[in-house]
Length: 101
Image (tube, helix red, strand yellow):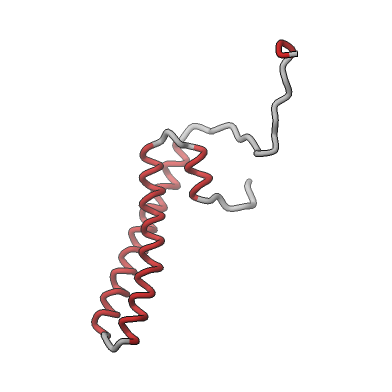
């Protein structure tokens, strides 16, 4: 079991040819950015006295979080369905075979 969490960029590199995975990761990234931006917009609208807009931003952010959670579950399923990829650490260098010597 791995102790360090995977980053989205780690998944992209490991499965670069998988268009569905790339689409999922791109959408998840955009949704994370949208959620953080909407939170700022909500705050600013509230500070400017636009309570209805602050509420709208909060509701849209909640919808984004729900769709993020749904896509994240599908990402987990998709990754479980992918064939195992051999893992090569950055510092690892294969030793030459007998035929290369």
